[in-house]
Every structure is written in structure tokens, then in C-alpha cells.
Image 1 (cartoon, rainbow, N blue to C red):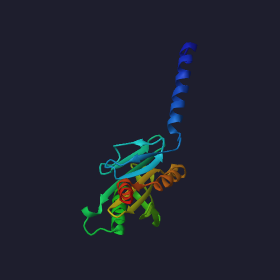
Image 2: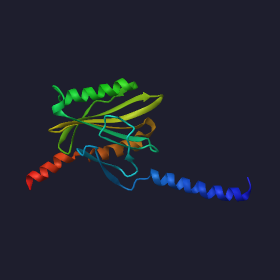
Image 3: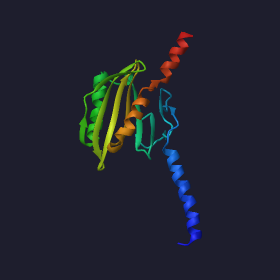
Image 4: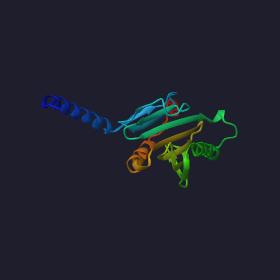
Length: 185
């Protein structure tokens, strides 16, 4: 390569590196609302809405560069026959268990997030020869069950799980909150 070619490649390579680094950085959380307007959650600013993670989800987001993903599936309790929180959680975990190899799960943790009680699970498995780690939280409101699932590669748990926990604490039902505000005014 001659000097002129190198002088064109180096600035381009530096620009591309800067863009990748900027895209991977977070400047603080941003709020995302589900497709039906029922729920919202604050996610890292480097995440964007997605449509390719789960056809049943009413919210999908993530950052492919960091291998961090989120799916929220919300289901009206009125649509489910004889379903309670424990049955719903078991159903969601069984669905995950059937889709991964080498499935392992830590004991459930009881959680309460913005007035919704639930269970949080740390699960690990293998998908297409990749070790994947999940934080699965199943929540119950007065009218809905919510499955909030976040995942990353096993080697990135230490970086991703604190982000997942921070996002999870912001999860809320928007429509219910709006209805409560209207009722008190």
C-alpha cells in the first residue's frame, strides 16, 4: 500500500471505531412503551426497539453490539383459564426450558415492582452452541400477567445483569397508572 491509500484508510478506521464506541456507550436510561401502550420500562440509552426477537411480545428491545436483549409478553388475566401467578410463572419457565439445551435455574426470588408482585429467575442454557444467561421476571397486576425476559451471553453477565436489574425496577403498567391518576383527580 502506498502512503496516499494509508492516509485515506486511517481516518476512516478511526471514524468507524469512534462510531462503534459511541453506539456502545450509555448516556442514561430511556423510556420505552409497549406496542399496546400497556407497559413501559426504562432501558439503557444504547438499546433500540426491535421486532425480531419474539412474535408474541408487546415490547422488544436490545443492543446487538453488547448482546443485551429484552422481551415483554403481557397477557390479560381474563383471557387465561384458571391461571394464577405460580401457574403462569411455571408455564413461562417451561417454555424457556424447552427451547434451550443444558437448562439450569437458580431458586426463584420473590419481588415486588411498582406494586406488582412476582418471581424473578436466573436461568442459563445453550442455544445454537452459545451459552446464554437469562433474567426472567413474571409479574402480576390486577388485570395482567407480565413476563419480562432479558438475556445476554454468559461471558457478559457481569456487565449486563446490573443493567437488567436497573431496568426491571422501572417496569410499570402505563394504562393502569393513567387510570389511577384520572380517578384521583
